[in-house]
Image (cartoon, rainbow, N blue to C red; front, side, top):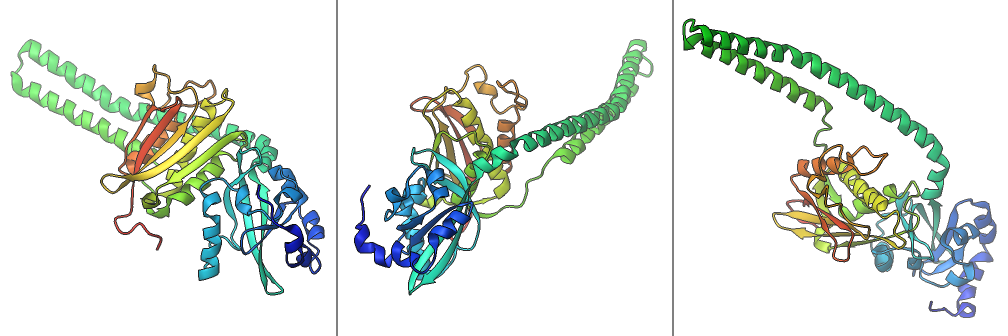
Length: 386
């Protein structure tokens, strides 16, 4: 790392601030990690909790740019974020809590909850960040969440059984009628009673009952469907950032490196944000599960413009790749190679993408692993931020 001249900068920086504000006392009293930076993005104070969270000692980071604690693409863009705020005064994160990712000394990334405040001291502007490691928080809650998941699973099974019973009951009547009409038609044909007229009538009744059975099935499908949701113009960068934080929240991605690359022309979508996040979370978690036995775990998320006003996203991992035995059936429901899996994750992704007018497919990665690609609609107007 490049070192700044601490003696030259200290009077106006850390020591100057510390002489007026007891930063050390405040930092020790706050359970969250606390980082203080100046308006150029350089670190002026780094609490003990921050040392434990990021793996750096305070002396190693003082004077360094805070972007060293961020993964891409924020690492490269953080100075632009500060300059934009200083120029426009528009607050995009200050005073607002945000789920995002941070970068440990080892290079791994982890989900955090970040709150940023601003202070003016002796005509100097400072920003203070309070950070919670969401993965550690979720480790403490995991047992309760496991019980809740078991309860929810039991409830789904009960509801599924109820729906199946209703389907069997409702379909039994039209199917029994179809059987009776077919038997009557056969008897008429055998006895030549009034010829083909009555046969046609019996078969017409069969067609009516078949249509009735189809109507019942469609109504049940509509009942259990989640619908298309509400589509709005959304930032893909924000969707991906929040989805990654959610996917890693249970601590399963503690030793994985996740990188994001978004083409500037592909950052805006016209989608249901929650549904797209659900799709991304499923794909990221599938990748994490596929890399269980991989030492150097890597996930890459790419986005680029595609034809017909669409955006193509890709989620790639360096796991063992897709089993050829199930490659043609990946998106079918209840297909899984995991003993504790329900086999609905990719099926849900397929439904969400198709509901948005896109398509999803899988392919082998260039260096092994698997790549899941899918397309989503871009806004019809300008893709710049409003």
